[in-house]
Length: 406
Image 1 (cartoon, rainbow, N blue to C red):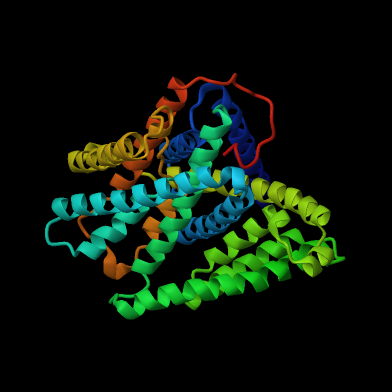
Image 2 (tube, rainbow, N blue to C red):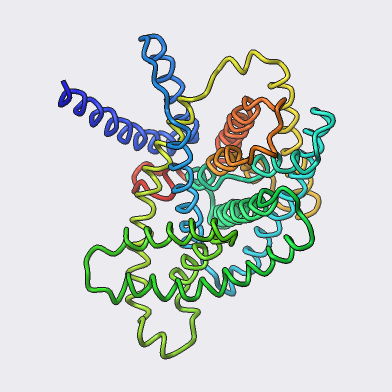
């Protein structure tokens, strides 16, 4: 019986991985975000389990574990994806300010909406809830840009990556202590400097593990070091994600390093070879993590929340505010194209993870978690609409499943 149960589990896990791969191919054919398909599969599995009388409870710790690993992978992938060059400086600058300004304005607007919706709630608590809802999810954007022309594709990739990083850092600041003051702001600024200095040491250590180490087992050892650094940074209240981002940036832009002794020790050819392999391993690992994270999240969704009119009203109000603010910035301030950039503001893994990391003292009792699912679903459908309306390049079905396929 135990062997049979084990085989069933193996069959189910591997079957879901294959299904996720098929969703990635379907995404290229239909422009339906694979994340929505994974969420739908999770919901269907929950319905089938309930119909069969099976009581399956997934611990919150499992969701948080997958989300934390996914968070580290997303930041590392962002660093490995960002190419810094003179030709791209204008694009990087415009995407950074787009991510920063839209995030800040959206956070304030959503905080105001929540404050108006739940009178008497401390404004800081409203802001903490607004921050996750204001972050564009690179985990959803990146698989959905394969059909765009290069400039649009790079703009959206940079914007989503910057939005993730900015949002996470701001969230960590506002949830670091029950009483925020000038000392906290100074420590936050000082910790940034410490994190950047630590990044230099970590970069050299990890590069040694990847390039100079003669033991074959080195890539997952490097990931283990990154996770230890992240956890240690959290315990010391340091923005350790900066260290992870810097490592990815240095590896992916090694040609910009001009210090000759270091270039002799770590040759450009060796670093580039390891960077390519690191991207592949990171993409494959992220594929698995995202697959099961969104399946589990979908499995835990209670569809009865859509029967609550206040949930639909508040969720719709937030989504409308997000699209209006994005329209104003892209069209009036930035004077950028609206199609398909206006539609690419989905919420996803980072939003879910940060939402569940809100400290108990900042929780809003009257805030229904169904709003979170509504915003994720609505923004995903809006992205699908934008991807469908914009047709520039022929749809490519063939290709590897990696960073751009979950």
